[in-house]
Amino acid sequence: MKYNRAVRDAHPTRVLKDANLQAANLEGANLQKADLERANLQETNLLGANLQGADLGKANMVGANLERANLFDADLEKANLLGANLVGTNLQGADLEKTNLIFGNIDVETGLLSPASSSYRWLSNI
Image (cartoon, rainbow, N blue to C red; front, side):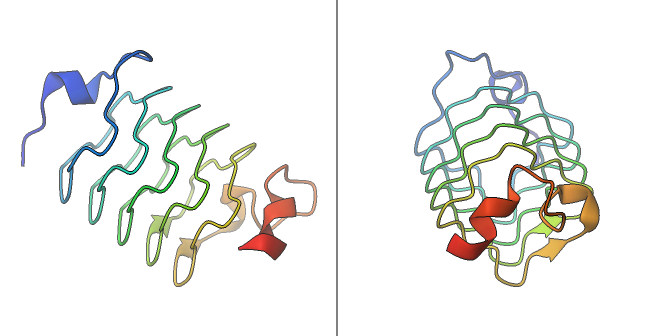
């Protein structure tokens, strides 16, 4: 599936709230600081995407591929990442409060498995 250039290079002021991007191919997309609150990103390919500082609160990311994506300082509060691939994903500083990471594929590079990680504090709230 091709994606729109406006989505690929989302500007911080671009609002993609409630967008339906289910199963879209957004590999390598620049979505830095994009507003994707409540967006449907189920089964979406976000391999290597830049989502630094993006608002993904309450987003549906079930089964999404976020391998090697940059989610530094992203807001993922109450997002659903059930079964998402997070191998090599940067989650440093991300807000993961009440985020569903059940059955997610997580490795040490995410920053979630180290007590020194800024995201570690949210593990008890997940």
